[in-house]
Image (cartoon, rainbow, N blue to C red; front, side, top):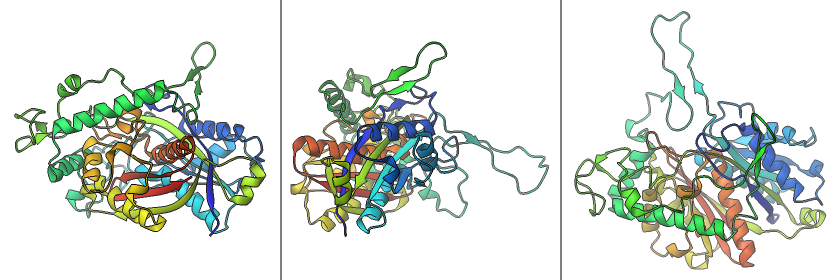
Length: 425
């Protein structure tokens, strides 16, 4: 197998739902990250890129018809550079990175770009076709922003519950209190705000010029959901989003039967954003003339009962570390998507040897955003298609700053899957 290196990684700042990136098409977001990535590597002839892989979890709107190929064309790449879009829901971006790395490892490619994109804001409504012409009854319009729609009646009903109810099940299983979830969410915001103030995102985040109705474009330059002013007092006032409010309150070890603990404050928001990474082998490194950020060493994927989807990273990480010949003691950083605080705390509870001090040191999706997420009234998330690529790039940049170490990027995935990537430097 050929060694695979991540040369560079960029991402847009993450926009909130109907926020600073709401007027930018997802294919344009993806194209922007491609252009910025290549501009930072002047030694690379873009025509040498063997393939462009992009993750996208929706595909029903402006990113339809293979957004990877569309982004490559919009970014000005030669028409000879192909592109493919992959979908593993929340981990679509990480799946794209893994597929690109696999192609390089087996010799099918030498230089590849991988990334992900999602615009939750611009996700369209869809209207199913009827079984027969000229129906007399009403029909249902579905939002494609997030979650289950047009569910197959053959699916077990417990598999198709809202993602937030799945988080409640994890809280039940591991006896995770509302207070613990709020504290975790607060720390995510605090770490995200500190990382931004210290410039830790500067190496990966590239501003997006947003056209205005009048005047010149305005740069969208900072993650929009980080709240430096977040507090436990403010979070405690939020009502549960999926189950009824607990009579016992947020300080209870567990709410009374029927009470909820998952709120808009301890879950990730709906978001828009894109990310892209440049991957190559040793020969490609020589041609590009750059030192890599990190090396890809192992991957892991797992399945679980869909109603416990948030715990799937546990086994995915275990498998990836076993393939890499590593243990939790060898890790410098682990980036786990924060769909919900309960989901993260549930995973940590099932990794007894893991040190939580290295978990999401720059904040996670609760603060930064998860393109795709949950809204308080629906289901939440970090721009779905972009999240996995963002996590991989963030781990790579952290390892590069450290100069050495081992890191993991991992995500839970709706319908019960987990995906993990091990990087080393």
